[in-house]
Every structure is written in C-alpha cells, then in structure tokens.
Amino acid sequence: MLSAPAPGQPPAKGKAPKTSTKAVPRLPNGKPDLTGVWDHPRVGDFSKSFQGCVANSPGCSATAESTEFPWTPAGKAAFDAEKFDYGVHCLPWGYVRSWGTPYPLELIQKDHRLAVLFEQNKWFHIVPTDGRKLVVDVPTWMGTSVGHWEGDTLVVETEGTNGKTWIDTAEHPHSDALRIVERFDRTDYDHIRHQVTITDPKYLTKSMTNTQILVLTAPGTELYEYSCEENNKEIMDGHIKDEFTGHK
Image (tube, one colour):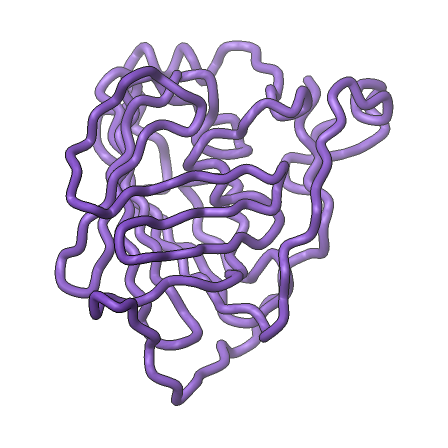
C-alpha cells in the first residue's frame, strides 16, 4: 500500500515553550485576533498524544482523550478495508487531517471571517463568523464551517464532508456524517489552544477529542510555495517512504 510522503524536519522535543509579556492582540470588535503563522504538532493519529512542532518551534503538543477509536461495525469494516492514500494523487486531505500536516499554517482573521491557509498543497478553508447558521449546500472534501464566539473562545462547527477522506494519516476513516467542533483559545501572545472534537454516528459510538497547542512562529516567517505533482514516479514506484507511517 502506498501512502502520502511526509517530508520535513523532525519535531523538536524536550524544549520549554517560549513565553511573552505581550498582550493578546484583538480585533476591532474586541475579540482575540488569531492572525499569524503558526507551528503545530503533527497529529498523525488522532487517538495519540504528541510532543513537538513540525517546524521545530518549542512548545507544541497534542493530547488525545481517547486512545482507541470506538468503532461501530460499519466504522470497523471501513478501517479494516484495504486502502490507498488519496493524498498521493494530490486530492485534499480533509479538514481534520489537514491540521496534522508536516508543515506550518497561517490564520488570517477579520471581525466576520477566519481564513485557514495550509502550506501543504496550498489548501485553504474559510470560516464565516458573522452569525450565520450552518447550512450545507453540497458535500465537499473539507466540509462547510461556521464560527461563533463564546466569550473569548472561537467555536467552529463543520459538517458536510464527502466521506472520502481520513481523520488522520494513520488511515482512520470517517463517514459523510462527520461533525467537527473546534474551540480556539489564544491563551497568550505566543500560543493557541486548539481543541478538536469529532462525532460520527455512522462510524463512531462516541465522540473523540484531541487538544493541540499551537506556537506562533518567529516574526517574518512566511509559508512556502508547495506543489503536489500527481502521478509522481518517485512515489508511485515506492522510492519515497512516509516518515510517519513507514509505508512506501
């Protein structure tokens, strides 16, 4: 079985997170501004905890509340089925899995909108925060999201995925009934606590939560251009190994 490659530097471990005395920046509406280029842990398995940042910033972590996937019979059958990593063909990884890519991401926030820019494959995802209700017009790879504020916490709800992606690079599948709830807290100038809770009544018997700590990158950091080449011979012939799964 082939799997998408995961190039990039190994995460730093054992370093203390930096701290800042700067105040949390705020939007014109008074809410915390999440804007910035953020380093994050590579959550290659949603049911596991991790330490370290993908770009070697100190302080990233991920904490899983469940250590195993609580499959329904349909979910277990989907997990046990033979799979091929659709990412090899440059298809979108899906929203939850995209947060676990081996590269940083950028958040751009305005009063009524949040944009998530992933360096991996140059994906982006838009989250309206203008009070609209979550309405899914058509299933998509990344799903449809809306956000609202609960105090200083931004809550993002996502539904309407097409069921063709995975939760993570460890090949845990989800159905088209997947629902994602994220809670973003800018705990200080340099850190965001990003809590992700997934429910899927077709594939999971109960919800699962993984909470990540994101770290603001150094001033001047920019995302790099990324090009995913479909039918890359080095991948198709098994010359490149995924650093997370060990698969070729």
